[in-house]
Length: 138
Image (cartoon, rainbow, N blue to C red):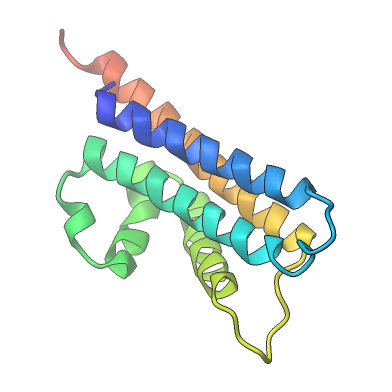
């Protein structure tokens, strides 16, 4: 696997883990802050996993709109359900990152569900890269 891809995949795993760690902090004053911060870390993890995929299987796709990237995702990972779920998760995480006075921050179960999808996508990208690397001629 190319060094940049390994770094991005590791970054995706690290960001999901950091988001989950943030959700477990129980300190006064953090009550209203952690949901949006955890959502931001989750969205960054999803984007890092996608960037790793583009570098490895479709260089140049990162230059297209995020909408285009999300539409291509199910086909490039070979899993329509996970790709569709990942696109919906990106949208939910993105919405959760923005503070609006009339909206409630995401709940811990919502965030955990979204982070599980991000983790699944990261695992799928790492597995795909591993399979492709194994079949590459030396």
